[in-house]
Figure 1 (cartoon, rainbow, N blue to C red):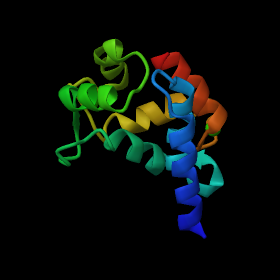
Figure 2 (figure 1 turned 135 degrees about the horizontal axis):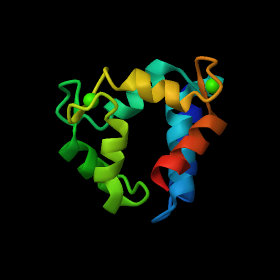
Figure 3 (figure 1 turned 120 degrees about the horizontal axis):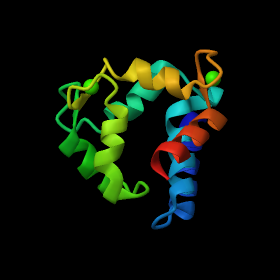
Figure 4 (figure 1 turned 90 degrees about the horizontal axis):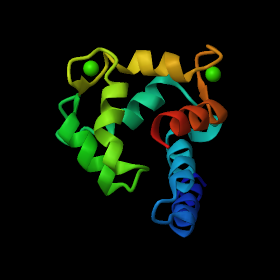
Length: 129
Ligand SMILES: [Ca+2]
Ligand SMILES: [Ca+2]
């Protein structure tokens, strides 16, 4: 049943995905990482940031972030270097487990320990659109 839902979601994502379709991307990302409870836990949001970590060393370099951001058709790729700086909360030029808790607390607007779809959408648009 779960795999059917995943396939259906993938097909749906293909249908709605379009070049420059920032909102389609946003819905796809949220659904992919939030799971059935429809909210992002800290671990789930970490997983999203770590999907940029191509080398798998636990840290996202600026180069990894830039190239994945472009490849995946996320909004405003020309600004990806600036997005990286915004996300690098513990400024050491990599995104890793030191940064993720800060990003999570900033995106969890009401401080209830999860990032809801509304909170995700609001922050995604503020940071990246
Ligand atoms: Ca950092
Ligand atoms: Ca929240």
